[in-house]
Each structure stands twice: as C-alpha cells, then as structure tokens.
Image (cartoon, rainbow, N blue to C red):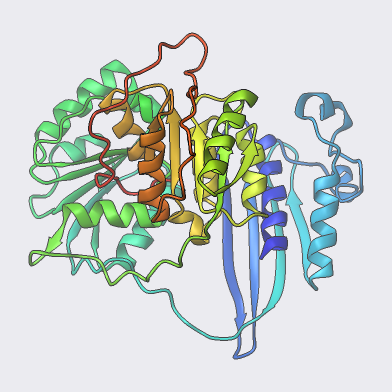
Length: 421
C-alpha cells in the first residue's frame, strides 16, 4: 500500500503541476479477480499541456522533463516518474502513458495483488427510494454523485439548470446542489437566493470555495451548506441528518473504527517557538510530540508515523492548515476519523463552526491555556496524562498582527459536523 501511494502521489502531483485548467481524474478499475489474486488497473488523467512523441519516449528517464524549456516554469527534475516506473515494475506491474501535445496526458499502471477475501463494501446509507434532485455542472462529479446516490438506493432526478432548481418536481425529497466559483458572484448569488426560496424540501449545498467564503444563502426548509471536496462519509452523514427513514437514521450500521494509536501528537506550526512551547506542554503530560514546520512536512510524517492527534496551525504559508487537514483526511484508513484540532487566534463562534464544518475535529484558541489543552486531550485521547507540576507562565501567542483572542466560555466538543476532506 505504501508503494502504491507513492506512485499515485507522484502521478497526481505531476498532473496538477502541468494542468492550469480543467480536471485531474484518478480511476481504479478491477481487471481480474480470483480467490487468490486481483489485478487493478489505475489511471491518472489530466487536461494539461500534454506531450509530443519525442517527449513521451524520454519521459521515464532520470532528470528529464517533457520540454526542457518548461523546467524553469514548472520546476522538478523528472525523477518522480522514473521512481514511479521503477516501483511499479518492481511490484511486477507495468506503467504507460498516452498523450498528445496540448491535449492532456493519461498515465496508467496495472498491478496484480494478493487477494485474501472477496468482500463488497457495505453501503453507508439506505435511502429506501428517496428522490434526490441533483444539480452539478461538473460532469465527472455529477457522474460520481449519481453513482453513489444510486448505490445508496436513492432515485436521482437530474436538474440541468438553475431554473430547474427553482421549480423542481414536487415529489423530490432532497436537493443536492453543486455551486462553482462563478455562482458566488453577487448577481448569481441573488439568483440562487431567489431559487432556493421556492424550494419545498431540504437542500444540501456543496460549494467550491474556501470555508471562510461560504455565501449567506437561506434554506427555508432546512439543510446544510458545506465546501467541496466532500468525502463519501461526510456526504452520507449530511444526507442522513436531513433524511430520516420512518424516524430512524437512514444509515447502515457503521463499522467500529479502529482504536487510535496512543502517545504521539503531531504539532504543525510554521513558527518554531510555538512548536517548542507546545512540545513542552505535551511532554509534561507524558505524550510524545512530533514537530512539523509546514503542511507538506506534516503530510510526509503522517505517512511514516503512528499519530494519535494533530494540533494544526491554520495560518501557514504555502499549504495552510485547512488544506493540510484535507490532505491528511485524503490518506484514508484511520485518517478519516483521526482527531485534527485547529490552532487559531480567531475565537468567534462563527469561525469556529466554519472550521468544524470543513472537517476539523475541534478548535484550540491561541494563546493556549492549559485547562483548554487538557480538555482537548481528555476528549480526543480519552485521558489527560499527568499535568506539569507547575503551570507554564507563558502561552502560545497569537500570530503577528492579530490581537490575542479570548477563549470561549463553553468549548463543547459534541457539536462536530461531518468530516469534509
């Protein structure tokens, strides 16, 4: 699994780097399945700059880019593709590329893996034929939502335009609406507000925006507004909260999550003095802190360390705290439930709710107070290790230029919203 993740990370990073507009799509297909093995066919397709024949022929060589003149613009040495090719071949697979200059690129690789059992993934929900009106302008996302909703036994009613959302069929039980950046313009927001006022059912709005830029849109019959991308689990939880089957939750019994590893806490902050202070606080409580100075560094550590909890600074250069959290959630497995706590100087309840809304497990306000830290550790790790014999006289400062915020009086943790990564 680690080597497959390395190959996928290289291919996806490469696709994103060379794709200024359009999309990057990862597909995993089952080619063969027996009682002892399975053959997977994995592709990464982008709509980027593409490659001509000469570039394709030398693409998997070390220190080679498709076009040397672009090396300064895009960076990199070309080692990533050579390493990916070597890893795939050492696992007994094959890797190939299809591309045309200006027409995008598709990398594919196939692997035959050992299979110990054949088991179909249980559906997270059973919607029992509920009718869901779906508006999603992005074709790939629309197909994914349609497939998933039908897998959950919903009847999907396509809504091709905003006008169709204004007067949806009366028998629709839920609206699932995907809004783009273009929909956030003032004139468009006004039109969407008018459309939603005519809706006679709950709505779930998935908006392609930063969590702090969510528009003020009212849902007269209830609903939720959240950001893209949304995880399978997060979407299921949100729909389950809006649609109840005969008074009972619509979800299938959830698998019991595996217990979190104990002891190691990852502290992510681009200010070294902040990291060192939190390190001392955690060590005084018998925990083992791991320090990361950036979101990228945290992501690398997460793939090699067994981590119980993450304390994540929000305002960091490059990959900010929200982006780093989403990247950690995207690792899958236990990272879907692993507690990630935001470190922020913003104490307004609205901002805290936005952080929870986008996938943070909790918020810890700067400057950090030891009682608040103890409460976080007790809630998410199940215990408070022994506190320091004497409290530290200092607290983690707010970022430069920001006034220290007052800690909320009631820092309840039971109002967490579905994970969105």
